[in-house]
Amino acid sequence: MKKEIEDFRSQINKVDEALFQELIMRFDIVQEINQYKEVRDIPVESKMRESILLERANQLLEDTEFKEYIINVYIEIIKQSKKYQKNNRG
Image (cartoon, rainbow, N blue to C red; front, side, top):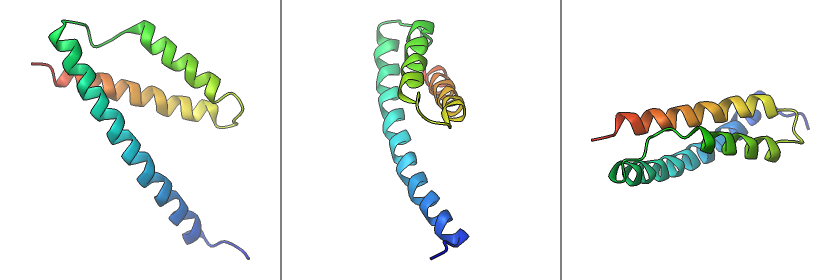
């Protein structure tokens, strides 16, 4: 049976819903981290932490042809997380 474009779009919609929920959870944690850092006067950015995150992502995505694209999305998530933290300091 041949799939119609609507079937593919429905699948994408379901994945997007799950992805959005995971991102909300991630940003909830980012918010907590930001509060922790602010109280302790810790800078928002940590190049060492970013390096560790990207290294881990590269390892987890080692066997996929989509690695480059997913890494670029991940870099943007990190960028937006830092932006959120900077914009939400007292």
